[in-house]
Each structure stands twice: as C-alpha cells, then as structure tokens.
Length: 287
Image 1: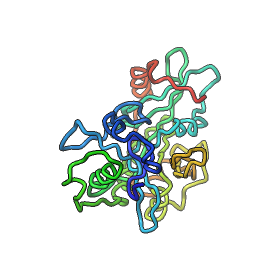
Image 2 (image 1 turned 90 degrees about the vertical axis):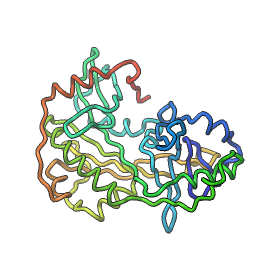
Image 3 (image 1 turned 90 degrees about the horizontal axis):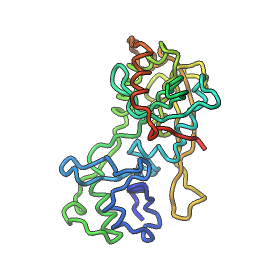
Image 4 (image 1 turned 120 degrees about the horizontal axis):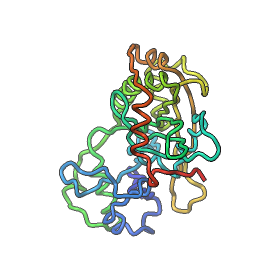
C-alpha cells in the first residue's frame, strides 16, 4: 500500500498486489471520464499522471487533487437535480461540458431539454485542491513497489508536494464572483462542488458566517463531498458522500470576498451555446 498515493487512474492502491498495474499504467485510462487521463506531464504529454487522491496532513486524510475524481457515478449531477426548477417529466437530461459564460467557462451544465432545446440548466463547477511541488516521485515509488518498472532517478527524487489551500480557495471564489451574478440575473443556479476539507478552509479563512442552510431560491450553492472508505468494496476503495450544503446569492459572495462586481449576459447567448453542444453523447440518465 502507498501511504501517499491513495488512488491512481481511478484504482485504489489498497490491495494493490491484486491489480494488473502494468496494464493500468499502459492504458492510462480514467474510469471517471471513460477516456485517457487528461492530466499529463508538461515535460512529456504522452504520459498521463493519473493521480486522483493522496493521503495528506499531520493526521493524514484522503484529499482529492483531480476534479474529475468527483464524477464518480455522476452523483454530483443527481444531487443538483432539485435546482432544475423548470424540469418536467418527459424532458431529456443532458450533462454538457465547458459552457462559456462571461469571465470564462463553467465546467458542466446540467440541462433539462425538450424536443432538442434546453429549457432549464444548472451550472456546476468542480474544485479540488491544487498542489505545490510535485506528486510524481511519490507516484513512481508506488509503482516501483508493485513491480512496475520506473526510472531510478524519479523514484529516488526527494522532491515533495503540498496543498495550495489559500490560492485554491481564493481563485475559485473570485471566479465564482465573476459568474454568479450572471446566473442570478437569469434566475438560474450555480453550484460549486468541492471536498469537505476545502469548504471547511473557506469557512475559516473567508467571511462565510452569512451563508444559509441550502435554499432553492438562492443563486449560489456549495456542495461539499467527503471521501469515505467504501464498505461495499473489498479492494479498499473510497466513495463520495454528500457531506454539507450551503447557499447564498451574488451579494453573499461579494461579502465573502469583500468585493463588488457586475456581470450580466442575455439568456439566449448561454442557451445557444448549450444547444450547440448537446448531442446523444451528452444525454444523461440519473437511473
């Protein structure tokens, strides 16, 4: 077992001897995206890093460092369905990636559509912890421990990694600050999906005392997930569990950051972008 790398290419490192790690590394397949892992080495884009979750801290806890790890069983979309206030039985559901809004793009839109046209949507942003330093030597040492050939220099490197708590939290809050007023102007919802550790940090370091218990009427929602050992698995794996929900509005995010800003866009701009990207590949069923 690796005491730092907990999940690699979607596979738990517990019970690692049972897994064909040479095949896993050769395939570089992300089970959450159902494609090759898109987190690649800057020095060699042909190599996917594949690290999903690490054991970190003085009292080590599992920390997700890849946002796509949060796509497990598409649970985050099911947990946001109640915010599709215009959804009706018979409508199609789509999960549309990277929809453009003022200030950038939103990771996913959960869309209710009828006759091929979007009728309602919820924006969903994913945020895990950004790291400082490099996880690569720890990854290489783990692979060496399970018999996968790796170069000696990388596995013996003394370079380590840390968690960039402050920059991660501030960056995502500033991004949300730019986007949530758009959603509020359109009477739509934006959801930030994060791990419980990151939300706890935000609550300590920013002005979150005014946030509400979750209310559908609020434009901005925080969904925090905890990684728990999965008792239904015999391989030592983890599973996502919704741990905490909070909500606020555009003014609430401004208060949290001590800032004021405006962002507005016509509804048609977003609906047109969604419709262009909708296809049979994006259609999703919660069942």
